[in-house]
Image (cartoon, rainbow, N blue to C red; front, side, top):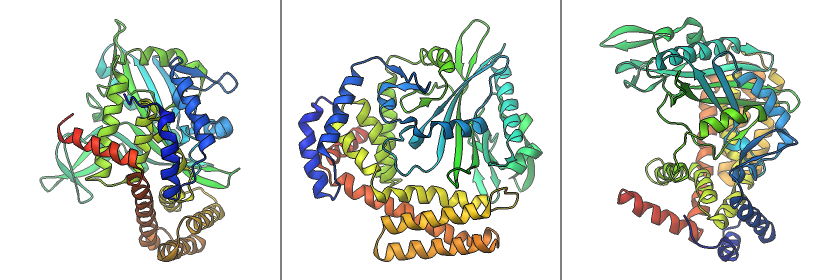
Length: 443
């Protein structure tokens, strides 16, 4: 744990922030620090009685119920229903669970605990297999949604798929047509082999995730909505086993229905006493990865924020909160939504073309506000080309180059923004140096 009192560092961080061009309100930051210190001293889980949502005390400080009705509507699409021998607990995660500080959220990320009671683990895997395919087939397309992708099962051997090598044990991605057919085709030893859905998932389910494109008519906007599943099996003797060998912690989730609290409590009671330390260690490994070999300082910042909240580095966390609210971070939204818009206009879509064009206009406005000079010119030119293509309804392939230019340009600009403002903050730079030393020593 970080031992320094957070208020000792606040004045220094405010001054450094101003030097870096980040306007950090000291009184507002001090108020948040005081709230963090108070909540950290309280119990672990807090329930918002008015809205019925619940989560870790620290996480709930970043959540506002302003868009709760919208997320619950999306939850009806992405969430799984309870049924005999299956109980669920649906939650918001990622930027959706940090609505107080994420002014420019990208995707609508959900997380769901799925608890299956059965005689054997293999039976639980088969139940999950049926649940996921039933969910995918029942939400292929509708007035406000369309299935994008499903991840389930693992490749049983090394193979090629669409010209790309796939390794044994890695999770299989399914497009909607493949889910409908119940099979994917791969190449092994220059022969085509069919992998069937009903032959997979036992005993290894892989990483279980579903993605949709969803429309919100009230906001006249589209979003990518995902649901990551954490699946547990309860044996006849009451023993609880995670199908992926690991029960996910709950330090970034806001659960949507108070009725799921008993299940939540049962599952998280299985976490080890050092769950926080393990979670922080895992996040720090990712932070190090994203500032070294897979350089993405935006992703590093998001993970550092969660590390700092859980280890008492509240002043540094307050600084990162302000970074997430800056106009440049709207580029994260651009990078996420441009791919969603592109996919939404593919064959089989059921979305209003005017909505796609309107949302592209909003992305252009965000790009103008976030960028300047050549970067702004290039981004706006590419977005205008995408907009023109959508308006002419000429199909997705003709705009693929522009879409990739927008996405890669946005990611590069966000990376540069966060890199300068993370490394320019002495306290964070020192933290990253210390983390590098610990990683080098295997700590």
